[in-house]
Amino acid sequence: MINAVVCGALGRMGTTVGRFVNEADDMTLCGGVDIKPGSFFGIPVVESGKIDELLNSAKPDVLIDFTTANAAVGNVKAASRAGTAVIVGTTGFSDAQREELRRVIEGRIPAVISSNFSIGVNIYWQLLRDAARLLKEYDVELIEAHHRYKKDAPSGTAKTILQILEQEIGARKKVYGREGMAERGNEIGVHVVRGGDIVGDHSVLFSGNFETITLSHRAYDRSVFASGAVRAARWVVGKPPGIYGMDDVLGLAKRTP
Ligand SMILES: NC(=O)c1ccc[n+]([C@@H]2O[C@H](COP(=O)([O-])OP(=O)(O)OC[C@H]3O[C@@H](n4cnc5c(N)ncnc54)[C@H](O)[C@@H]3O)[C@@H](O)[C@H]2O)c1
Image 1 (tube, rainbow, N blue to C red):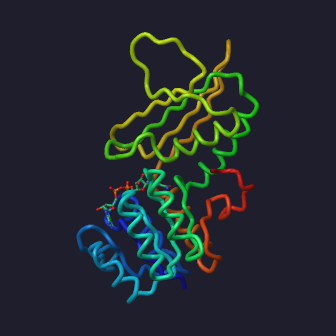
Image 2: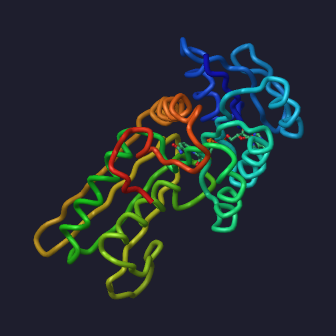
Image 3: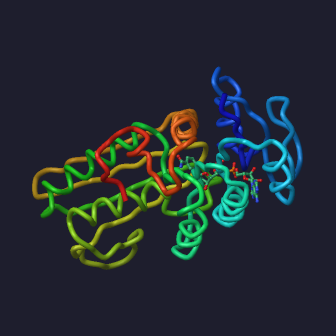
């Protein structure tokens, strides 16, 4: 049995992950953490200041974090102190925060960090890499859309897409939205849409003269991220310390930054 604690337990993703863990035959939901105490699926959710206490008493095998960048760094530090494996789905980290995560994870605990736990998106990233390699001369535009409550922009998934594209076509200037008079250069245009309850849409356009290839992924439900995160949680327990990606979990060629 794998015992899991969910951080951000009362949020959109935390609740969905909690449901998947709770329904899994091989997993036990043994606690939640959020800003305020409460409960989910009949399991107590403790306030964030009590995370060390929870990890020491419940002794989970894995902590799954879908919170905010600041909160996630603190939660991963707590997991590192307790020797608990982590799954980090939170996005919006600064470079300094990524470095801090690396420092508290490497040599201490196994962690899977991914800006997108959907299996489809991980395949989509591979398709984009192949397309970018073949379409270096084409103009590239990236469009992403999410629900009205999403705080970070562009999305973590969009940032991963930009990294993948630039590994194949070389570093390019990014232009975030366009307004007024401007000639198109050799940039990548990045466009962010926020509204309603859009779960997560990403499209990349490769446009040449007389033709455009568009590669898109659309998530219809948060379950795709939650089921991937739970799959990663099963995989990470017992692995040697270090930072892993969904490529490792899915056994794909190691190609995602
Ligand atoms: N990697 C993926 O596949 C994936 C998919 C969807 C969302 N996300 C990311 O997951 C994160 C959460 O998204 P959401 O839509 O669930 O947001 P949300 O706002 O609904 O939930 C976040 C929760 O974290 C809680 N929280 C804040 N500080 C905390 C702390 N210190 N300790 C514990 N809990 C704390 C909040 O109270 C809230 O309940 C975002 O960064 C989002 O971009 C990632």
